[in-house]
Amino acid sequence: MISILDYGAGNLRSVENTLSAIGCQYEIVRDVTKLETASKIILPGVGHYGQIMRSMHKSGLREPLLAAIDRSVPFLGICIGMQSLFTSSEEDPEVEGFGLFPGVVKRFGADLRVPHMGWNEITPVKECLLLRGLDEKPYVYFAHSYFAPIIPETGAQCEYGQPYTALLEEKNVYGVQFHPEKSGPVGMQVVKNFVELA
Image 1 (cartoon, one colour):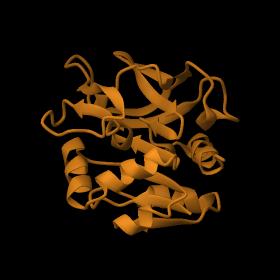
Image 2 (cartoon, helix red, strand yellow):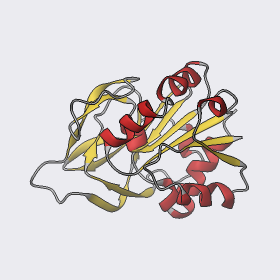
Image 3 (cartoon, one colour):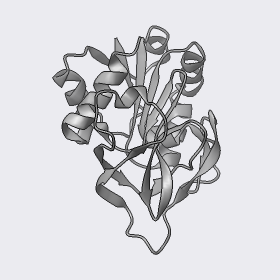
Image 4 (cartoon, rainbow, N blue to C red):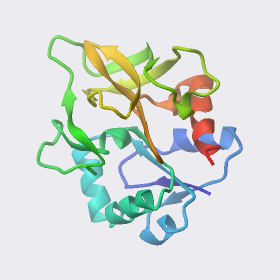
């Protein structure tokens, strides 16, 4: 059973629709006990970095989520859900991220149109399980004002003013800056690849 984390601030419907389209069973999780039996976890990110992190803490989901990841439960963070894996974000510098990866999520420069919205090509920098079955440089849909740095765990990058992490993979932890649920057949394949992970 796929568990979609509901922290009270995100739009879950598009993720639900994608999972339904590929015939995947899922449940919306709002309490700690459901995380203990989750086979895979998705954290959709829509909204404000600080709001998401505060909501995770207030709901009591933060530590159980980290414990599930530590138990090797596959995790997928989408957009801010991926950004939450880093140390912190310029969007709300005083709020602590999950800290699974070092680095600060930064805002795009003043010389760029923000938010960065629309379809962009991503370039894999190593073999990515989430990109299996896709073209060499697939196009996906982005909607964000902040970006994560390139790190050793970066699986694919995008360029908007500078290169940044578009996808990361490290053991059971996966993250995508783009919105697979809004990226048509390509995004559906990305979600399917996650669902079908052993």
